[in-house]
Amino acid sequence: MSAPALPSGPTTLLVIAKEPLPGRVKTRLTPPFTPAQAARLAEAALADTLRTVRSLPARRRAVVLEGRPGPWLPPGIEVLPQGTGGLDERLAAAFAAVTGPTLLIGMDTPQITAAHLAGALGPAAWDGCDAWFGPADDGGFWALGLASPAPELLRGVPMSVPETGAVQRGRLVTAGLTVRDLPRLRDVDTARDAEAVAAAAPHGRFAATLARLTRPPLR
Image (cartoon, rainbow, N blue to C red; front, side, top):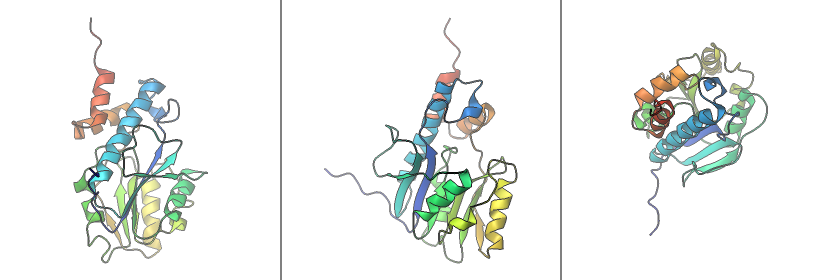
């Protein structure tokens, strides 16, 4: 029996991610977590994100990956190699690899749901709209959608600083694009972030993994 078809839509969905290896991901979680524990949390966040992506209407679904795929990769998700350079260059390369309306999200918001992305993925998502922008609580952004992928809109944007989101959104507006906003979400960067995100999505793999790692030892 063949697997059921995934829901289709007009937009390509990309997830930019790193292979969840100890010492390579979520380093700001260490301490209090060990590098191996931080990698387990990163893998859980990525798995939750990709599970949601599979349920959403899309023309194409892909993870833009630094590293190699693992058991966390579900069927129906392509793997595209991540570019080199700074994060702005890697994001630009991700958009350069696709055509047509595209929405890119990160692996740090495992609490995303269909409702968070509904505006950008519906049949009228791009009517009178050139870009979708998902602001993050830390001043960055968790999602960026472009009706016509334009890598130059990302190159040179300072990444991982409090003004990242403002600069990126300003770049879109200055280019004359009509921008619509997605809900503001919290990225998982620190242990406090992890607790808040797990509380927002208590039934996901991320929340379960965090609960196991923080459960008091039996006496």
